[in-house]
Image (spheres, rainbow, N blue to C red):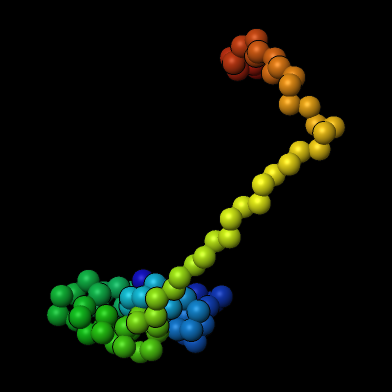
Amino acid sequence: MLVGGAALSAKFTQTKIAPSYGKAVCYAKDAMTGLRLMNELMDPATRETVLRNHTASGNGASVSTLVTVPAMPAVTRSPRVRADLPIPAVKDLDRKVG
């Protein structure tokens, strides 16, 4: 994965983003760095080196992330809300112009 831009930093990418992916995460400080990284990733001669450098840089490649989602609580309605009213049929679905 390649990330970057003004809202991110190399440290944030390394500590917060990379652990969620578990693979190589490349940070590009600007568009030209991103272009260089993409060219290196697309070149078979340099791809493995780039992947190894960005995986071995402590970016969390060996970290597994387990997310636990709590069960949704049962929803109860107020007795003042009526659900027994019929929904009226639509006369037509044609477009009307002014």
